[in-house]
Image (cartoon, rainbow, N blue to C red; front, side):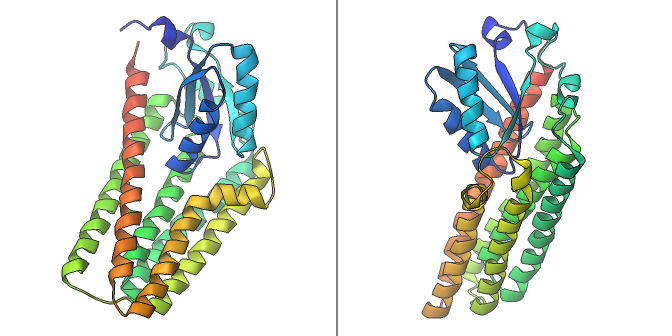
Length: 292
């Protein structure tokens, strides 16, 4: 299949700093808000932003400024036409990321260990406390950790390899999410009131871990290295943690498991939506990589 003129003029950036689908959504919104920017797509799977603009010389600096102000790093990838390549020939492009320093890699490893480590701890805590909401919240940690891990090990990979790894990751996370939903549905019929104090304690620690993960990455991001940047980075995760804390308080107040179950359904549903976004992005990236 021959490339269209529009595909040849697509502008692509490698994005550093994303750890979830909400990050991609924030970047897309920031770029869309600039007049003259069209068809913005940010793939969590490949961590590449693709867009078209009516006046690159004027609009691209605005796009770059808007994204870096959110705290993400952008690296412009050469166009296929400029390099005489097809869309799939991006192996060398992905290796030319000089900002990926040893210090940044160490920071990513810390984030991976924080997220995956506490995700496993929170999963164990969910069984100890009998809390479905904690179980669902643990998926968010595992998902963020695996996305950061992929970003860490796949910096030099081509688009196809990154997409295949992300596809497997998305399917794995989807299976976990479905398992939590089925487990929560089972609890609807076999009621079991969670231990509210233990449940709330794990959720509070989860909030602290999310903030720590943000703080570790802030020195390696462009933009505001202050409290606002920390909040932007961990806002969605913090909302999930606070929802679990609220559910624990309502369980203790009402003496019923329903607050725990309702929050579990909501958090697991949002997680499945994120897993589907990863799978969908990966499939689109595989198509782009196979295009001659």
